Image (cartoon, rainbow, N blue to C red):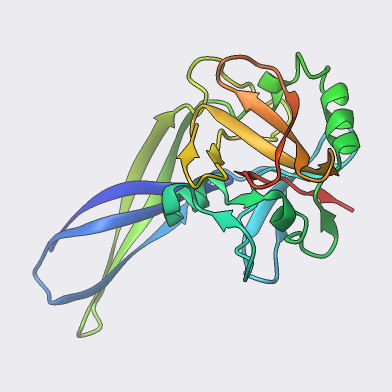
Length: 248
């Protein structure tokens, strides 16, 4: 028997790799399904499972005393304005969905809410101030190894297993790297412009606040690969940004 595959990382939920594979040569038996199951995956912090779709998110107690989701939100509402970056579902798994301001107001599960401008400001101050806290919130470089078990089952019911080691290295913030002091793991998820275009993936990350600035604009907070500042901004509500939620 021989098993030959190619692994490809398609995204992560927390530190758990979501992988796909291409089937290569399998000899000796008329093999049926092949599957990959993650083992030895490093997970830190508490977790919350959204009962609406079964997705699980890491959560972390931040220096402001509140519990924040430590991943970009990825719920798919039945309506409103939301997007996977470049309409690619794998990007939605890795970076979370992008939501326009109005949709972001409606997607939180029970017990959670979209943070207000005041809550974002409190978080920034608790982490050292907006000009200092950006690097502490950014995801740090990726450098870890995951072991998978490859299982193969023949049409006659015979089974075999094989362990596969996968090394993952890289960075989301190549110029101004993050230190991720608290486990917040902010990712540069880019933007979906109101004009219909996508941009700035792996360069900028924007997160909505629940607060608005007039009728057509909403507050948001930005991290850039060009500095380690958490910027408070206002932009059109029709752009679509990432979302983090806070526990009630």
